[in-house]
Length: 191
Image 1 (spheres, rainbow, N blue to C red):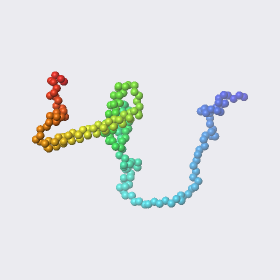
Image 2 (cartoon, rainbow, N blue to C red):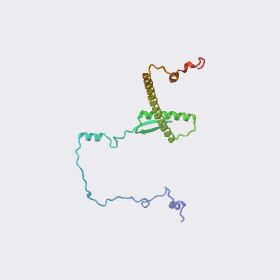
Image 3 (cartoon, one colour):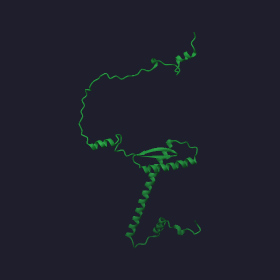
Image 4 (spheres, rainbow, N blue to C red):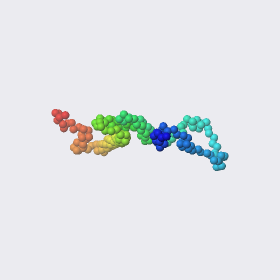
Protein backbone atom coordinates (compact mmCIF):
# COMPACT_ATOMS: atom_id res chain seq x y z
CA UNK A 1 0.00 0.00 0.00
CA UNK A 2 1.11 3.48 -0.78
CA UNK A 3 1.14 6.35 1.72
CA UNK A 4 -0.50 9.60 0.74
CA UNK A 5 1.47 12.80 0.34
CA UNK A 6 -0.34 14.46 3.22
CA UNK A 7 0.84 11.86 5.69
CA UNK A 8 4.42 12.10 4.40
CA UNK A 9 4.41 15.91 4.54
CA UNK A 10 2.68 15.91 7.90
CA UNK A 11 5.58 13.98 9.35
CA UNK A 12 8.02 16.78 8.55
CA UNK A 13 5.86 19.92 8.75
CA UNK A 14 4.53 21.87 11.67
CA UNK A 15 1.03 22.04 10.25
CA UNK A 16 -1.87 22.58 12.60
CA UNK A 17 -3.77 19.69 11.00
CA UNK A 18 -1.39 17.21 12.58
CA UNK A 19 -2.67 15.83 15.84
CA UNK A 20 -0.10 16.01 18.53
CA UNK A 21 0.13 13.58 21.36
CA UNK A 22 1.31 14.01 24.93
CA UNK A 23 4.86 13.11 23.98
CA UNK A 24 5.12 16.17 21.71
CA UNK A 25 4.29 18.64 24.49
CA UNK A 26 7.13 20.32 26.38
CA UNK A 27 7.90 19.01 29.81
CA UNK A 28 6.37 20.94 32.69
CA UNK A 29 8.99 22.29 35.02
CA UNK A 30 8.09 21.84 38.63
CA UNK A 31 9.68 23.43 41.64
CA UNK A 32 9.87 21.14 44.59
CA UNK A 33 10.91 22.36 47.98
CA UNK A 34 13.46 19.86 49.09
CA UNK A 35 13.82 21.05 52.64
CA UNK A 36 10.63 21.35 54.59
CA UNK A 37 10.90 22.84 57.98
CA UNK A 38 11.64 25.97 59.95
CA UNK A 39 14.26 28.35 58.62
CA UNK A 40 17.17 28.40 61.02
CA UNK A 41 18.23 31.99 60.25
CA UNK A 42 18.11 34.26 63.24
CA UNK A 43 15.66 37.09 62.78
CA UNK A 44 15.64 40.08 65.03
CA UNK A 45 12.53 42.19 65.14
CA UNK A 46 11.82 45.16 67.27
CA UNK A 47 8.30 45.54 68.56
CA UNK A 48 6.95 48.95 67.66
CA UNK A 49 3.73 50.26 69.02
CA UNK A 50 1.65 51.97 66.33
CA UNK A 51 -0.78 54.70 67.30
CA UNK A 52 -4.24 55.10 65.79
CA UNK A 53 -3.15 58.22 63.85
CA UNK A 54 -0.26 56.32 62.25
CA UNK A 55 -2.61 53.49 61.24
CA UNK A 56 -5.03 55.93 59.63
CA UNK A 57 -2.21 57.74 57.85
CA UNK A 58 -0.80 54.43 56.57
CA UNK A 59 -4.20 53.45 55.17
CA UNK A 60 -5.01 56.73 53.48
CA UNK A 61 -1.58 57.41 51.98
CA UNK A 62 -0.67 55.32 48.93
CA UNK A 63 2.46 53.25 49.45
CA UNK A 64 4.14 54.27 46.19
CA UNK A 65 3.75 58.03 46.70
CA UNK A 66 6.94 59.98 47.34
CA UNK A 67 6.80 63.07 49.51
CA UNK A 68 9.83 64.56 47.77
CA UNK A 69 8.55 64.23 44.21
CA UNK A 70 6.39 67.20 43.35
CA UNK A 71 6.34 66.49 39.64
CA UNK A 72 3.56 68.27 37.79
CA UNK A 73 2.00 66.95 34.62
CA UNK A 74 -0.12 68.50 31.90
CA UNK A 75 -1.91 67.06 28.92
CA UNK A 76 -1.24 69.18 25.86
CA UNK A 77 -2.32 68.85 22.24
CA UNK A 78 0.12 69.60 19.43
CA UNK A 79 -1.06 69.08 15.88
CA UNK A 80 -4.10 67.08 16.98
CA UNK A 81 -2.02 64.58 19.00
CA UNK A 82 -2.24 64.62 22.78
CA UNK A 83 0.91 64.41 24.87
CA UNK A 84 1.33 63.97 28.62
CA UNK A 85 4.20 66.19 29.71
CA UNK A 86 5.78 66.00 33.17
CA UNK A 87 8.21 68.38 34.81
CA UNK A 88 9.72 68.74 38.24
CA UNK A 89 10.56 72.44 37.91
CA UNK A 90 7.82 73.90 35.69
CA UNK A 91 4.24 74.52 36.77
CA UNK A 92 1.03 73.44 35.06
CA UNK A 93 0.30 76.91 33.63
CA UNK A 94 3.80 77.18 32.18
CA UNK A 95 3.55 73.77 30.50
CA UNK A 96 0.13 74.66 29.03
CA UNK A 97 1.51 77.98 27.74
CA UNK A 98 4.46 76.19 26.13
CA UNK A 99 2.13 73.59 24.61
CA UNK A 100 -0.14 76.28 23.17
CA UNK A 101 2.80 78.10 21.58
CA UNK A 102 4.19 74.84 20.19
CA UNK A 103 0.77 73.99 18.71
CA UNK A 104 0.51 77.43 17.07
CA UNK A 105 3.98 77.10 15.52
CA UNK A 106 3.26 73.53 14.38
CA UNK A 107 -0.08 74.45 12.77
CA UNK A 108 1.50 77.41 10.99
CA UNK A 109 4.39 75.26 9.74
CA UNK A 110 2.01 72.50 8.62
CA UNK A 111 -0.11 75.06 6.77
CA UNK A 112 2.92 76.53 4.99
CA UNK A 113 4.42 73.09 4.19
CA UNK A 114 1.61 70.56 3.75
CA UNK A 115 3.94 67.70 2.81
CA UNK A 116 5.90 67.61 6.08
CA UNK A 117 5.60 64.25 7.82
CA UNK A 118 4.49 64.19 11.45
CA UNK A 119 7.27 62.96 13.67
CA UNK A 120 6.97 62.80 17.45
CA UNK A 121 10.66 63.52 17.90
CA UNK A 122 10.32 66.75 15.95
CA UNK A 123 7.22 67.66 17.97
CA UNK A 124 9.00 67.20 21.27
CA UNK A 125 12.03 69.13 19.98
CA UNK A 126 9.66 71.93 19.07
CA UNK A 127 8.14 71.76 22.56
CA UNK A 128 11.57 72.08 24.16
CA UNK A 129 12.46 75.01 21.90
CA UNK A 130 9.23 76.77 22.81
CA UNK A 131 9.96 76.18 26.49
CA UNK A 132 13.34 77.84 26.14
CA UNK A 133 11.85 80.67 24.09
CA UNK A 134 9.20 81.47 26.71
CA UNK A 135 11.78 81.31 29.51
CA UNK A 136 14.05 83.72 27.61
CA UNK A 137 11.14 86.08 26.91
CA UNK A 138 10.24 86.15 30.61
CA UNK A 139 13.87 86.82 31.54
CA UNK A 140 14.06 89.55 28.88
CA UNK A 141 10.94 91.26 30.23
CA UNK A 142 12.30 91.12 33.77
CA UNK A 143 15.59 92.65 32.64
CA UNK A 144 13.78 95.41 30.71
CA UNK A 145 11.74 96.27 33.80
CA UNK A 146 14.85 96.33 35.95
CA UNK A 147 16.69 98.48 33.40
CA UNK A 148 13.82 100.99 33.28
CA UNK A 149 13.79 101.16 37.07
CA UNK A 150 17.52 101.91 37.22
CA UNK A 151 17.26 104.55 34.45
CA UNK A 152 14.57 106.39 36.41
CA UNK A 153 16.64 106.16 39.60
CA UNK A 154 19.73 107.47 37.77
CA UNK A 155 17.78 110.42 36.33
CA UNK A 156 16.36 111.29 39.76
CA UNK A 157 19.80 111.08 41.32
CA UNK A 158 21.31 113.27 38.58
CA UNK A 159 18.61 115.92 39.04
CA UNK A 160 19.17 115.96 42.80
CA UNK A 161 22.91 116.43 42.41
CA UNK A 162 22.73 119.39 40.04
CA UNK A 163 19.34 121.11 40.08
CA UNK A 164 20.68 124.54 39.04
CA UNK A 165 22.70 123.32 36.02
CA UNK A 166 20.88 123.46 32.71
CA UNK A 167 21.18 120.26 30.58
CA UNK A 168 23.39 120.39 27.49
CA UNK A 169 21.84 120.22 24.02
CA UNK A 170 23.10 116.63 23.62
CA UNK A 171 21.39 115.59 26.87
CA UNK A 172 18.15 117.24 25.71
CA UNK A 173 18.40 115.40 22.39
CA UNK A 174 19.03 112.09 24.19
CA UNK A 175 15.98 112.70 26.39
CA UNK A 176 13.84 113.40 23.30
CA UNK A 177 15.07 110.17 21.68
CA UNK A 178 14.21 108.19 24.80
CA UNK A 179 10.74 109.73 24.96
CA UNK A 180 10.16 109.31 21.22
CA UNK A 181 9.55 112.99 20.55
CA UNK A 182 10.94 113.17 17.03
CA UNK A 183 7.47 114.06 15.83
CA UNK A 184 8.41 117.75 15.56
CA UNK A 185 11.10 116.89 12.97
CA UNK A 186 8.70 115.07 10.66
CA UNK A 187 6.87 117.00 7.99
CA UNK A 188 3.13 117.17 8.22
CA UNK A 189 2.73 115.41 4.81
CA UNK A 190 4.82 112.36 5.83
CA UNK A 191 3.01 109.51 7.49
